[in-house]
Length: 142
Ligand code: RB5
Image 1 (cartoon, helix red, strand yellow):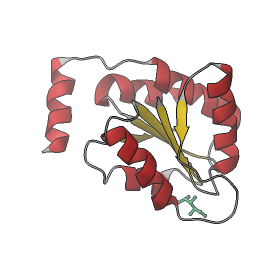
Image 2 (tube, protein in one colour; image 1 turned 90 degrees about the horizontal axis):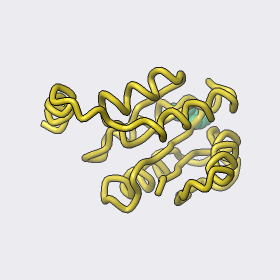
Image 3 (cartoon, protein in one colour; image 1 turned 180 degrees about the vertical axis):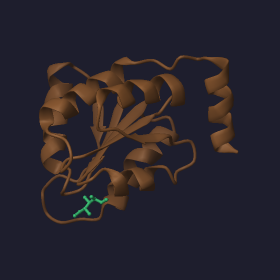
């Protein structure tokens, strides 16, 4: 189950992501926002990130205008490793190395074609389970 969250800036791209998830029968829970009316990204970042942190969702996708505000917010929630990715290499690497459980993107940064490829890489890549990466992730949590 994928947790989704966006603000008004991310809403148009989130519609494209939802279309991709539907076409590929990938289950999701959408925490909003649900329109292009101006809103505050922390509200939606927190709802989606808490669902991932509590184990109600396996991973999450967050989108705002830049991806920055929404990723900063998500990373304040204990247990969340939210990676801001605007290329496929990073999306794959952050799964393999950081076991990132949330992906953030900026709708004003990437177009829908690249964004969907980033999502595909993020969702299809497993954590490497390498000892050195496990050790480093433990150090993030302190
Ligand atoms: C909203 O205008 C914009 O500030 C927001 O989507 C995001 O880019 C913040 O980091």
